[in-house]
Structures are given as structure tokens and as C-alpha cells.
Amino acid sequence: MRMQLLAIRFGFVCGCLLLGACSSTPGSVPEPRDGPPLTPSVVGHLPDPVVVTEPKSARGNPSNYTVRGTTYQVLDSAEGYYATGLASWYGRKFHGRETSSGEPFDMYKLTAAHRTLPIPAFVRVSNLDNGKSTVVRVNDRGPFHADRLIDLSYAAAVKLGFADKGTARVRVEVLQPAKDFFLQAGAFSDLATADSLKANLEALTGQPTYVVRVSRDALYRVRIGPVKGHPEAVRLQALISAANYGQPMILPY
Image (cartoon, rainbow, N blue to C red; front, side, top):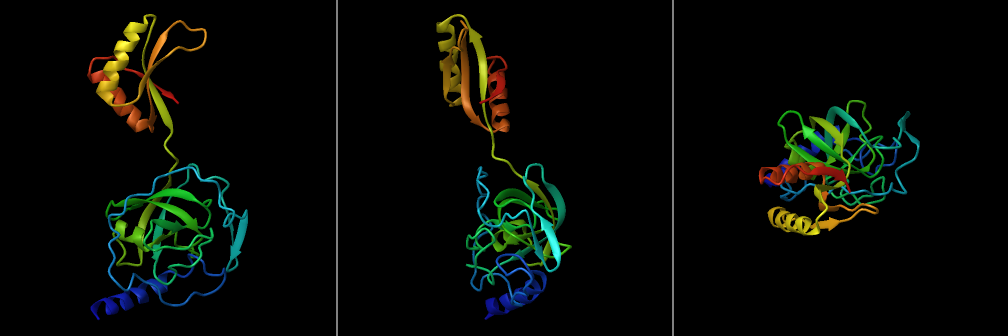
């Protein structure tokens, strides 16, 4: 009974706030009630989705579309997108319904609706009031309110610490997949010297290490990688330098 009363209270608040995300027909007024699950769920510690490169969805990416008399231009690219504003969330009312991408909405996954970002896109959403953040995958359109920036799944709202409220002030930043790098630790005319350094660095870093010769080059180059992401490459560079093996160069893979 307590959970039912709680759900009704949440449904009243969120129903007033969440009037357009997910798979509602553009221009229609959704049913008045939304809210958290009717039974308790544990979603506060879901791991962030892995940011990967995905092709644009065949659905949900028109050049523009109109909802309630307002026309929205879908961005060609998500790269560099950054904004601050209000986030709202949606839950059980839309659970299982089709999103704009055609995928079913799952309130227990870390997803979001956005009016103009390409679908799919990965963004980091940070709650400006409590410092919490999470990564979500944008696969839906909305929220269709001028004062809202993004509509989050129930799970994302829990992670960000505002599932018991209607909205939160957030920062939204588009994320790109981590690029691969390799480190070049040295170049030697003597193969034995290169092989010795290779063995030492492999033991030190635990990373794949190899000796290569570039075409028409007599030098043996000791390389480590591929390394996922520039921060990891910088960490390994510092580790190798601290172990007195010099400072390797970080190069795109």
C-alpha cells in the first residue's frame, strides 16, 4: 500500500512534467500519469553504457520534423554538442513502447530523449545540483517543452539523484568513442637492444609490446599498444618514464 501511494504521488508529479518524450504520436497529449515502477527496483548503480560508433538509425533522423506547431532541425553530427538546462524523466507509462528509433523504451536502461541530436548518440549528463553524472544513449525524441533540454529514463534519473523530483539542472556533453593510440618507446639500430626493451616494457605495463621496422628504415622501433583512449596512453607514458625508460611518444594508432 505504501509503494502504491508513493507511485501515485510520483505519477501525479511526473505526469504533469513529462508530456512528450518517447513514442507518443507527435502533437498528441499523452495519458496523464507516469512515474516510477510500481515495485521497487535497484538501478542506482548501473554501469555507464560503453560509448561505441553506431550508424544513424533508419528511423528518428529526418532532417526536420514538427511537433505542436514547432519545427525542429535534427543535427547532422553530434560532435562538439554541449548544453545546460533542465532534465525531466519518464518511466512506467512509456515502458515497452516504441521509441523514435523503433527500439522499445526500457525505463531500467540508461537512455534518453533529445529533440535534435542524431539518433543514436552517447552523452554524459551531469546533475549540477549534486555533482552526480551518468552516460546515456539517446534513442528517442523529446521533451517537447521549451524549458526542457533532455528527457531521461527512470534509471538515469535514479543515478543522477532526482527520481523523486520532476526536473534537475543538468549539463549535457556528447561523447565520442575512445580512439586507439600506441606508444613508441625507442628506435634502435641493434635488434637485441630493441628486444630487451620490449621484454622489460611488456613486463612493466602488461600491454602488448612489439618491435617493428618501417619500410626503408634500418631502425627497430619498440611500440606498445594499441591503447584505448588518450588518458590511458598518458598514464602508461608516465609509468614508463618513472621507471627510467625515457618518455615514449604517443602516436595515433
